[in-house]
Length: 192
Picture (cartoon, rainbow, N blue to C red):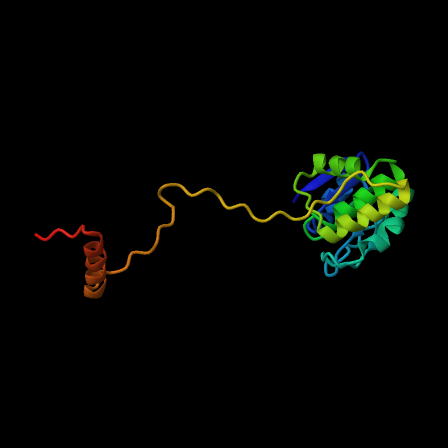
């Protein structure tokens, strides 16, 4: 179970962390933001759950929730906030990045670096990147990052042991006689 601390009161995780009541208590969590379709919101005394039912697909409109979630995180003055999705790699980091841009006044570039410092395996899908770019443009009037076109997969260089050579064909009498005929034309056939 991996919980990443983004600020003193903001945490990011996968779906397993909010199910651990001892962890939620120890971190002083009073708000859980659940950005999944299927995972349940646990019920703990004094802990509110904000549901963001969204799939982890590039076509999912997570950006429609940026303002509402950021406002709720910002207004949580009673304790810490845990934002989670299934793995804590795409949906929940995107929501945290949107919060950091809106209420901490940082650019998308800086917000992404901030989150990645605490959670190095963050991997936003392309659709969420595009929506964060739109959000940054709306907040600051410009973008600080560009999404590069996907690069083709790089094939590792072949070693002498793995280099491909043409397949060997079994010698047939026809191939042998064709080979001899070519050599005869060139005057190189030597008879034993």
